[in-house]
Image: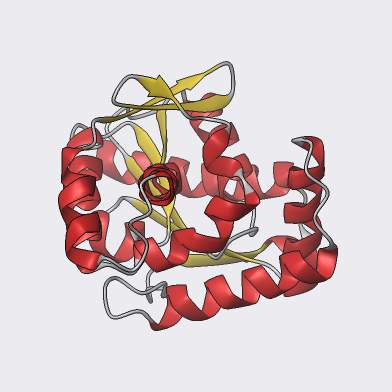
Length: 227
């Protein structure tokens, strides 16, 4: 298998991007990059510093943050200015505000540049909202994962519960609907499916089926590159 491929996975919140991307990266021995974690990290520090709504200050602040991603024992670890915030960025408060931060063009430019640097040598599985459209529009394999709102809400509520936070399913669903609207309608890098992306509805497929589908595409592209 080629070690230089770039695999880009986009989709809305709760569609299964992280779980699927992690397993694909593990199977290929590729680097896994969770770009959403970077936007969450910025959101966390914006909230801590009471900067919500102050766009210029947020952009300047985001540029000052030293964000480092690593993938250890099947989990994404993220440090900001040397502080491990891997757990804090998954809070409901961060979930409720991250789309507002993500729609700021200046913030996206800063983080996209970092993401492109991370994956420039290939051998990566990168997931997010704009990987196939902005970060790596020429990615070797493009995947768009989706799922019904009820399925996504159940998954996200379960994630919160497993991390010690019991959030009512209706509240989770409303949060997802708001995020979907903001992510799909923002001016800066909206969530869209490119014509050359393979769409997979994860509502009715197992994780293993999703992984195998992507690996099949990787094999096809790798074989073409060899020939």
